Amino acid sequence: MRVLTPSGLDHALALLAEFESSLTPLAGGTDLLVSWPHQNSDEVGFLDLSPLRAEHSAPRLEQDALVLSMLTTYWDVIASEEVRTEFPLLLAAALKVGAVQIQSAGTWAGNIANGSPAADGVPVLMAYGAEVVLRSTRGEVRVPLDRYYLGYKQSVRALDQLIVEIRVPRRKREIEWFHKVGARFAQAISKLGVAVTRDETGHRVVVNSVAPTVVRCRALEDHLDQGGKIESVEQVRALLSFDIAPIDDIRSTSRYRESVLSRLLYFYLRKANLRKANG
Amino acid sequence: MSHFDLTLELNGKKVTRKIPLRSRLLDALRYDFGLTGTKEGCGEGECGACTVLLSGRPVNSCLVLARQAEGCKVETVESTSTETLRRLNATGTSQCGACTPGIVMTARWLCDNPQTLDLMSLREFMSGNLCRCTGYDGVLSGIECLLDQEEGES
Image (cartoon, rainbow over all chains, first blue to last red; front, top):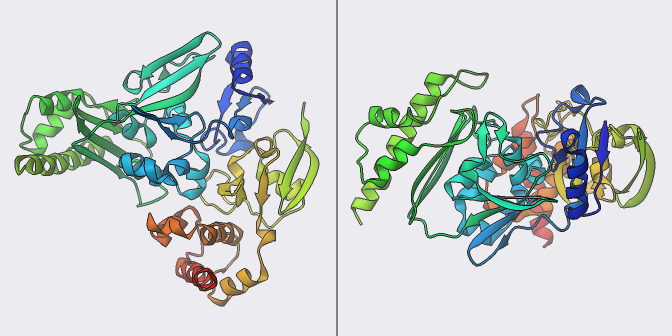
């Protein structure tokens, strides 16, 4: 194995540019180091980002956005009163990622980069309209998170690019909701998860564990944006079917996921609509 | 490079050892620094038996490369005060003992950060430490006892 240790961000980008195909950026290690003795081999190469922790961990609020840095952990969000007050879904999702040991080490950027369809941090960021800031020695680009993934574990990130920031716009939201279904209340990987927001740009309904990537349910969002009513579980299920493709796996079944997701959204959206109707 | 020099501030003392590059923090603590109190349970970040405090936060030491801890402050179960152990023992917190070092470290961190319980219940906070004896009630009463003590002192 090989571990390269950069002295700063510019050095990290230079190393990535030089050795891109053989280096995986290593942040909290909560995905990359699972069962490490069994996956350690001569071929593994890490770019260890831990020397950058001091400078690139703290989340900060700018005028128009919350900025999560490259190494901001779940616990950094949980521990920040101003962040958790203004972005309650980030808190809700962070509290559902493993337990304190994982929350202390795991990073939001790592959750995005790992690309798991079951990522708990990604639905809430996507529902908040987050942008991913990718930097390399070639320059910097911003990509909306809902256009970041190309397929299962595939993304627009080039091998020489690092996720250096996640920018979450500060918007006034009329509704916001996150719900995770796991085998138990805490310390479980998602059977499915869902985040819903509505702000001046419209509705966002984002789900995990029911498609090859975390996805927006565009057909349902369009229906809601056009003022469509929520009438039945069947109707929600039909609208979801344009965007999701759940499978049977070790944690759940396609049928369970589709059925539970439809019901969760039906009951939540009915309640949200009623609240709107009542002023 | 198959080995490197790792320097830690380990339980308050600055220490350096040459260790294999592939080592996890857990391996370095047990095999290179000789602190075998920290246990390996699952090796995949589920059970919390290997919990140590890294730079003041509880982490699973099986999910940290030793290399990532370079220059950091690390606290292990060996640094636990006898008073803390006495209180935990009084309530039957430990049964077979395999999960205990991790539980003690998570509990110690909580005692230093009790405001955490404004955001979640004690049971939920401790959910990253699994006990195969399923002695959770004894664990929770032990920690409540520790928290009461802290409250009494402040």
